[in-house]
Image (cartoon, rainbow, N blue to C red; front, top):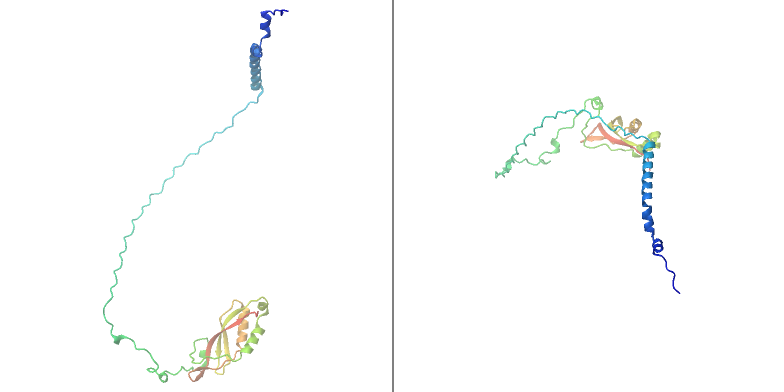
Length: 230
């Protein structure tokens, strides 16, 4: 059985591809896109709000000319100080006759010393503290009594707050060892301690002071300390 013959024109129509159809419709797509873009840009420029640039201008200040200070002249460096000459040892021999002989008690016996100064009136010595010559210093005889007096006369307001201190006191001691006068020499910052130290000073008892074999009245200086017992 023979196949039915198909015309050549019909075969050519059935062989059209998608690329051919795209090329045939390209013109309409191109001009449609151009028209749409034109309308869009027209509407954008027509209805978009007007924008203005900010003023960024600035004014420059007038420059002021400053006069420079005069140039400082640096003085030249001082001249170098010449080094001292090298000392030279002298070869001169020292004569033994110019040396000082040692002082000994053999050459200066105690018996030849001048007598101790005499005080014609006690008022001159007791007027104010001063140096009093003596060979034997007075010693304290009633230390337990003094310790009790320190405890008794310690100002309570200072003792309760743990405040202590030392007061230097001058003592004018009689030939019997009694305190005839007492004065503050180096005070404490606390006035109450100074007053209490003078009260305690009146309780001191001493052995008499000696200047060689003579009993004399003397001024001595002693510290009186107030401290809180631990």
